[in-house]
Length: 509
Image 1 (cartoon, helix red, strand yellow):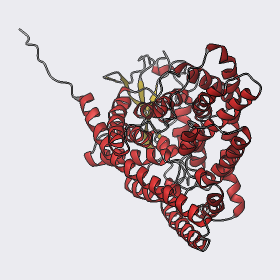
Image 2 (tube, rainbow, N blue to C red):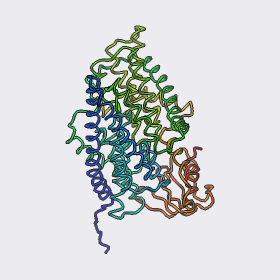
Image 3 (cartoon, helix red, strand yellow):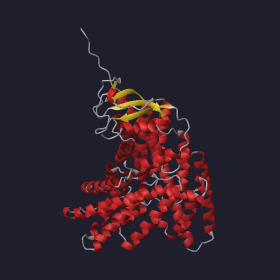
Image 4 (tube, rainbow, N blue to C red):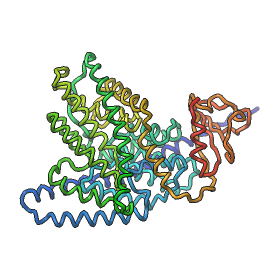
């Protein structure tokens, strides 16, 4: 007589435990990072105000400090080029097996350089660096406890999600951003670890910074259905503006080539230009969350809003195009809020909209502008809900974000972080091209892999499928195995061919 045996399946439990560990460490690192930037920005604003009040001799000190900051950051970027920019394309490249980074080198250099660059008042965001810091923490934990390649990627993803959660107190957006924008697949192993890490990291950040949402603009009036025609126009305009932002940001990196400076020294230019800007408009320094919060109290007239958008758009391009460590996430949200307010003010002038709904247009503008530029509408909607602290505007957020997304898609605009990753990979020196790596590729509905037998798929040369994962099952890649949506296939290929292989397997039918 056969005896039934019972045993616990601890696989998912270990994913959650490891993800939570990454969340604890990331929450501490990013909270210190975030606090340091906030104190630094506050100091710089006070310094510029002090100079404007008649103490002009201090201007020499400010110039010297910024020069020192520029030199320090330049040396850090020269030693570790992968800390340049937001860090999100680098994390995406890691999870796609196209980049191999030194976690400790990234962690401490990005931490120091990010505080110096963002804290000096440049129009850069903390979220991208926070995501890369979290990914470095996740990679460090994976290498310490010696997990396999798949679990290592899971912990890197958990760290990335935890970084965004701690930066913005937005745990659900952290998970969704990793799934929608970075990992491009709804893998159970990935989302479990990411959710565990995000919740813990957010809890630590909440203890440090309090429970008030990051962009708590106050009570938002409910938008009546009769105004949805105006929301359609809002989405169309923000989609076009988002497409313009994409093209301008990519072009800004090329413009710096005209300076003929070594790439790592480009940061000296915005660090010098930020000084007159700080003297003229100290409240406009930084990522811009203070400006969004100010809109909750008073929405300025259209001329002031236009001037703010113009200055922030131009200087954001100057800041990010230089390659200084800093993100575009928060600057995008700020521009979205200002653009939404401008469009709302135009409707008010024509008598189509009550001024009481201007704050709604600013909030919806943040989501739609980010959805257009990042082509990540789900992340945009959830992020704004968590950052603003309102769940009563899900429908207008979703509607306008979808319209803005479709506009960029019709214009053939690519997700901005994907474009930045492609630019990064093109600039990488082609070392170790013959190294074999294992790609983890999801089987998505509507692609060439769906409902196909393995033998019928046109595999590229020097590529070999080693395993198929279906739920908790690991299947041998027999020729007659039919691939189903939700499966994950593991492909062994040369690193130089990895991008081409992945693109061919994700090709739409």
